[in-house]
Every structure is written in C-alpha cells, then in structure tokens.
Image 1 (cartoon, rainbow, N blue to C red):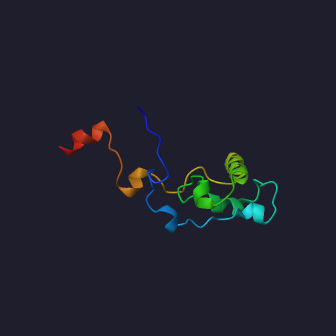
Image 2 (cartoon, helix red, strand yellow; image 1 turned 90 degrees about the vertical axis):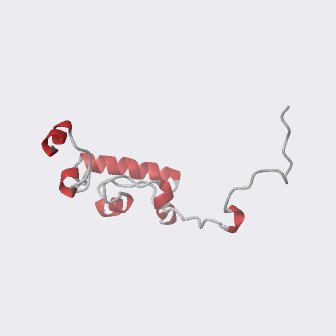
Image 3 (cartoon, rainbow, N blue to C red; image 1 turned 180 degrees about the vertical axis):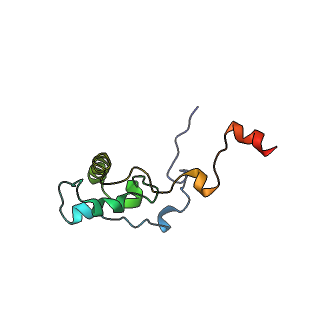
Length: 109
C-alpha cells in the first residue's frame, strides 16, 4: 500500500531555498513594448547565439509572451534575409573536426 508523506518526509531539492535564483525581468515588459518588430535587427541580435540559434527564455529573461514574439520576429527576419540562419564560417571542415565520411577511412590506410 502507498503511504502518504508528511511534511517532514518530503523530498528536498538540492540547493533548496538557500540558493534563491534571481528572477530577471522581461526587457519588453519593463519598457512596455507590446509588439516586437522583425525589422529591428539590432534588438533581435541579443536573442540569438553566436551559432545563430534562438536563445531560450531561461537565458534571455523574457516572459513567455515576449519570447514567442521574439522567436517569431527572428524567423521572419531570417526569411527576409535580415538575420543569418547560421553563423558565418561554421563549417565542420574548416575547424578540422567533425564526422568523417566512409571514403575518408580508406584514404587513411
């Protein structure tokens, strides 16, 4: 039979209340921006990584509503060629690492 846990028997998360996370405020809510414009490329660059990926809410500190708008604006800006889909020079062969093809195995012998 399953037993119900009392307050003393509940699992505790590591870190607990002693390591309180500082909550970031949404930049757009703070400045009372209702809609995010895809043409404002300088503002959108803050929300994409060096590789060109859209950063998550946890990283950006944006609220859910504005994060969805940021993602939509970044996608629209990419479609209009205002933002790149990937970072420049992100080819694996230039870095010297990465996965090799089957043909490369024969050449090494």
